[in-house]
Amino acid sequence: MNGQTANPGSPDPASLSARDSHQGLLIAADPYTSVDRYREKFGKNTPYDGGIIAIEVFFRNDNDLPIRINLQTIQLQIGAPGESRQRLTPLAAEEVADRTLAKPKDPSPRLPVPRVGPPPAKRDRKWQDFAAAVRSAALNTDLFPPHATTRGFLYFDIDRHYDWISNARLEIPDLAFMNSTKPLFFFEIDFDSSPH
Image (cartoon, rainbow, N blue to C red):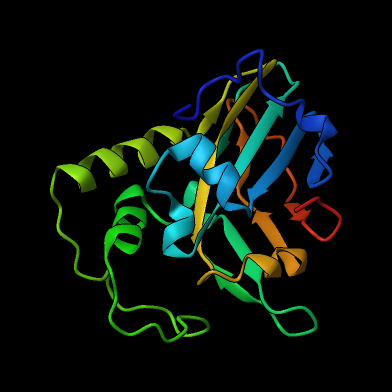
């Protein structure tokens, strides 16, 4: 959707159990944790193959003013249930393509040690097509128009620990109304009650 307004076939963000709402803004999240959902959305190659979770995020702005978000400050806190959580930042489409299409020889776990630089990947036509599909589905806008719903995917490398989503929280700290000094408060979306 490229961060565009949601279409009529989209789920109602208010119906999703993982959500936070205040000050006329509803933010809801739908984590993809099964291979079937990924195949339906992305086709043969998917972020799931690279151990990456795709979280579809919906922003319903019921205000009269547009809202700007700092995408660089979004974080996913995730860890094994009962253990402390690690903070992850969203991946760019190129990083998703690198981690999905590269075949690492060492299958050792990546969490909690962050990878230094992307793995080597052939950036051939297959890579370019996959990166383009990931990019087109991503949340690529930092401006939410008034009285509209905007949606897109955020991608996080969770090293195939899809079962950890029950111990995860999406933090969206940096939003502001355009042309207004009125502040917007911090949004936190817990996944512990969301269906997997």
